Amino acid sequence: MADQRVGVVFVSHSESIARGLVELAGQMAPNALLVAAGGTDDDRIGTSFEKVTAGIAEADAGAGVAVLCDLGSAILTAETALDFLDDEQRERVRIVDAPLVEGGVAAAVAAEAGDDLDAVVAAAESARGAGDAGQAGVRASDVAADASSDASAGFSRTVTLVNADGLHARPAAELVKLAATFPQKVTVNGVDAKSLLAIMALGLTKGAEVVISTEDPAGGGAVTAIAALAESGFGEA
Image (cartoon, rainbow, N blue to C red):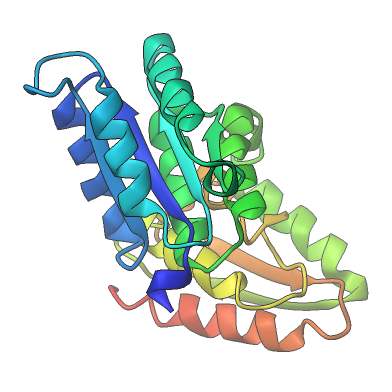
């Protein structure tokens, strides 16, 4: 249920940036509670205690709230807002140390998938290592070959990516959301299928070989479902 999802608040010195991030993340997480808290009370550049407080209240449906900030004083404003929450609510609100754009998108997709607050925060924080994940995508064909080899002891499917624009943000988010519905660990070309940033860092283009694998004996259904989604073009090919 949408009202049970973790909420995400974007705190920026710019109202336009905060609203733009909600729009961007909303393309991949249309049912998540995403709230913009940007600018001062009269929409100048800066941050607002009242906007952040109201944003947390709006995003808090009881499952928790992840707050992402752009600059240092935004963090101070968010920390002050948390100080004014009652103890019960404060326990389910986290200020996340993560890049605002990459972390916010990853958090939104995790929230959309129904992950709990710890998992949403972890998804956002994974953006801090996005550069390392990108190294895995230097040569997609090499990664795919390695993944195929690693999957020899488990269950694996290989499909050809048909999306005209490759595995960009929207289809990657669909893949991650589907993977998150299965408890088993599944990899795509050797990276965690539940990590949006790792999937996007692969840089897979149309015609690329996509190896979906699991070493879990119970993971065949997950692999089959993800392979079917990829073969369908994630609904956009």
